[in-house]
Image 1 (cartoon, one colour):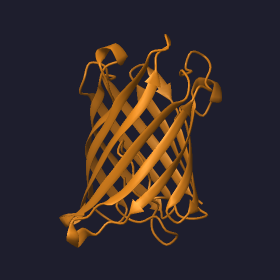
Image 2 (cartoon, helix red, strand yellow):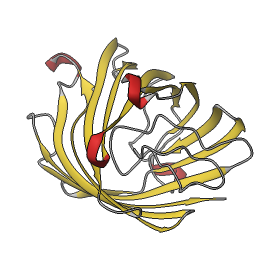
Image 3 (cartoon, rainbow, N blue to C red):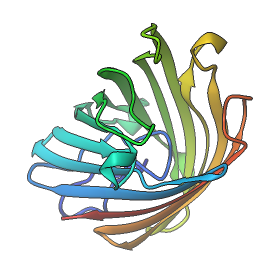
Length: 228
């Protein structure tokens, strides 16, 4: 989650490596990918997000749980940047992200039915090159037995830009807030950093440790992002 607008002349603005995504969109006619390598407990995955701007404030999104289609479901979505930030007035930038996860995976990784989710991202520019991002949301899911349930989503991140190319962040991440019957609350404490190679290429890293029993004890993520 970077705090600068992602237009052609500005540095790339990515949804990762933070859990809390950016409030910006890629811009009309721009394409962007964010490819991750994630080690979570004893498993390794390669989730990837593809973004394409169809208007100045609207983008289409395709997200995979793995670059190997048989190892994860696909999610289709849109992101709408609904309000620009106004730092002197303390007004955050706001976006809305609507995704639909589909049961397209195989190999024991397929979900159950279409699972919609809605998230809002609010980001503030703070003094001394700090930035604050908050992401609440809700997701509808189903168990293999056909039990449908709703779970919450929440994240908060505090970032610090040290130079024009380098920033760090700390955050609290909860991709699932649910009852124990529905898998429990999955939450972690994260730290990470991102470095701009050029205006269109970025490297990122995030390390996480569990905050709840339902979360993996540790997680390490590396990300490469590029814009065209």
